[in-house]
Length: 169
View (cartoon, rainbow, N blue to C red):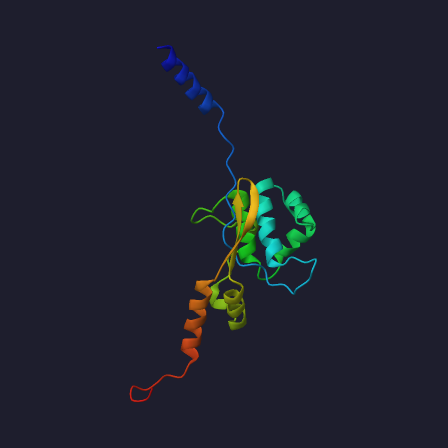
């Protein structure tokens, strides 16, 4: 009887102190296209920044840990072509968006039909990046090809190719 009463009290205590919602792990994203600089926001720094944002929950602290400023992080987020990075940032801070919900920060996801062939080639070449976090530390960066960009690129190139007649190959 005493054991059951103790379990009931533990359940009441658990329900009276709800946990804070946890941040979401950084999803795979396409890094922002920038020219190469040693002290710039290269894809590795962008990836580690998202991991540090997940671990700390603070933009200023995450930027400081990767050796960049908070202002430059927000400037990178607002750049043209940073939609994937901004969506990953929002995903880390607030979790995945529910269908029909407006994106945080007012940025819309870029329409694939409006990307140039040059952008699609770059997305395929760069691929998707995701930080690997294990036991509260950044352990590495997972890099995989962007198959979606490749398929869209092939579809666009296929429509531009001249049509073959049945008799000639």
